[in-house]
Length: 346
Image (cartoon, one colour):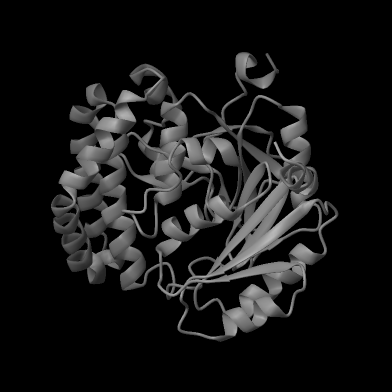
């Protein structure tokens, strides 16, 4: 290693925070203001303007001297821009933060502290509160149901405030931290997803690799949610969310579980679409299903690579999921005790 490379390595921050902006507007400014006030300061910040039609995103990022701004000439989606950020990052830990997520002052300190306490864990996720009502949860990590339908644990439930640390199925991309080398080794986000559920797919692949995700309840953000895509029930969100959930099922489910999960998934989608409040979106769901079938050749190619690299057994994956339909319908958190073999350094 030459002298310049050694100097760059010595100066590298512990954490790289990556924010992917697209029509983010005022939420981006608030997001960056909260980052500027972090008690943990050994981090760099990348803001990727993902070819946003709103020139205000880049202008806001330039207001903050600590920000490195990357301006894309085309929209790479959250997946593509997230991978771009990982390649540019210098920190050992790669943190993804949505531009509509506002971190409490000790957020990074709590994530860094968890990494020190559990040196063999490589993936962490935050407690997310609703920005408009911080007494409500936006999520306690992501849960994968036996229906192949993921959800944010505790979404829109009252924040209990005394949640213990524990393993969850996968981290939420709105406020997660992962070992950057592991992220790159796994291939990062699947860019075929473009946007929505790419974090669930990554989390599923972490499970398949035998890498657990720790919920750090003391690391808190307040989240607006879908601010860049027109809201949680916009046509864009419904289409991409539905299509990509099919992709996750096709790609990541171990073969022995497919005959169970696929029918349950289809039944679950039909049931959700049949509820009166979802009738206006039924045609979008149908279009997303047809689009997912068109994408099968690409997904099946990815599936072969993912399943070849799998280290966890199908039984271990099944145990990491929830098969209780009340968990899914009630969006209940599923937080499991840390397994002793994974909570202490080797």
